[in-house]
Image (cartoon, rainbow, N blue to C red; front, side, top):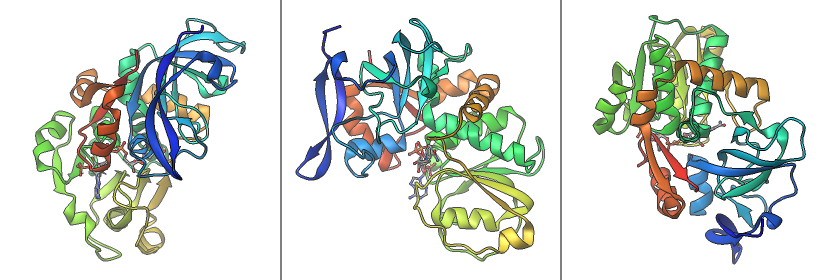
Length: 330
Ligand code: NDP
């Protein structure tokens, strides 16, 4: 295989990271055991940080960006995978320490891959992507904690119109939970209602610092915003409730108190997708295969090409992307 293919790489530009399209050959890829032909990748918040250069995501340069891959195994030195297998990869340091998915071909470690669930095409899997798989990790964490009940008290989703938020709303509503969406974009209410949200709150009501123990409202929450929003959500969570925290779209700080935890037994469940063990990944993808409504997924998804990535990276950081963007790599 001597043909060249285009990849979006983060390169060094006088000490700063900069995205640049480069032509690669298979021989230049890392020496991992499985060669995958990438069909689709996605745009996540972290990809926005990497491609725009606004976040130092890549820890060595040059780095192929893109934290998600859906594609077909072309060659494998591992017994676990063979040519023709359809696979998905989320995280595992792609775009940070390992070359990622914005490339027609990529070599990866066998243990990073999971089998594409039968329920999904490559495009579906990347419409879900890391954002959607993280939403499923959050829903599974809340259920495992036993905090939320179908038909019971409200479950709040912050950053509702984003990728994690949209998928969390769809999963929770399909599973029968009563979902409230917190968004700063009232124009998305119809879209979020279509995904199953039944109540809406303006995100501004959560971004002002509030008291340490506010009126109890949420049985549970999926929070992709962090900062004052997360502190307020914890303060408004009912006795014995839980909040799955996965994001920092509003900031990485947490300006709260221990009072919700020590007086109301509220649990803060941290959710990481990047290094999550395989069993948790497979459980999350099972949740998605069984409970993600395909019409919801379609309504969340926009398809774009690699050339669109530099502009889209800035859009996602500005909070202007609705739902999920799939990147067609072919
Ligand atoms: P998106 O940009 O698609 O969604 C984020 C949403 O947060 C926006 O759509 C917006 O929702 C809201 N938002 C943006 N800025 C602010 C702000 N300043 N204050 C309050 N709300 C804001 O990103 P993703 O859904 O892909 O990711 C969301 C977060 O989750 C990111 O921080 C990301 O890094 C993190 N993440 C973490 C993972 C992990 O492994 N822990 C995995 C995946 C994502 P609206 O317009 O509705 O208000």
